[in-house]
Length: 112
Length: 115
Image: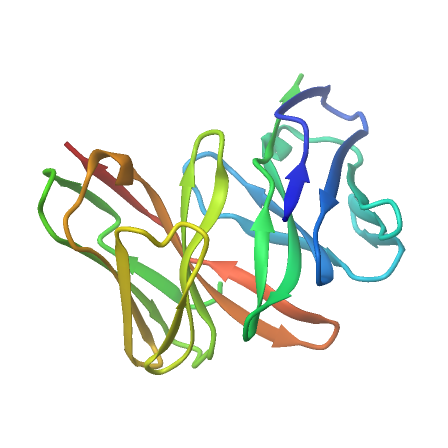
């Protein structure tokens, strides 16, 4: 079956660095996504990893290890606006299309 | 902005009534998805479409049906709403580009309350 785990909640301080981990067990793995979701809003795409290693995009970086079934999202120079839920999602092939399975999300609270 | 709108944005209905949610896209994407989001469960796939009149079930499809008669519109119907279907419903499209072969982009969501 498909399974994704990520911490439910995290707290960090403005200006600091935080790492949000995601572990997964899936068949037909086709890549891993991170989305950001502010309260009451839709998820928005942050990053995509299909190869092992680190992808950097400004203050946000995402890492993938396919052999370990592990990913993390690294947020640097935290700002108050980074307070949101961060969703880890794994892409896999099933039937006639690619699908996403989502973790429950990690709610990050950034404090002054 | 992926050009996705959902209607209605909020709806309160009573148990046993039929409800239809609409997702509209303006960019001619082939793949469209309906998810529900509930506390403690994350986003779960209800149904998806891979073309006009081509649809298939997701992991939580019981009690839901869908239709896609035009590329731009994907409808989700609750034939007889139940309180367990109180949720936030998101529509998504799949945009294919380069390395990111199946990035999904989400509409603004519909908050449905079944009393």
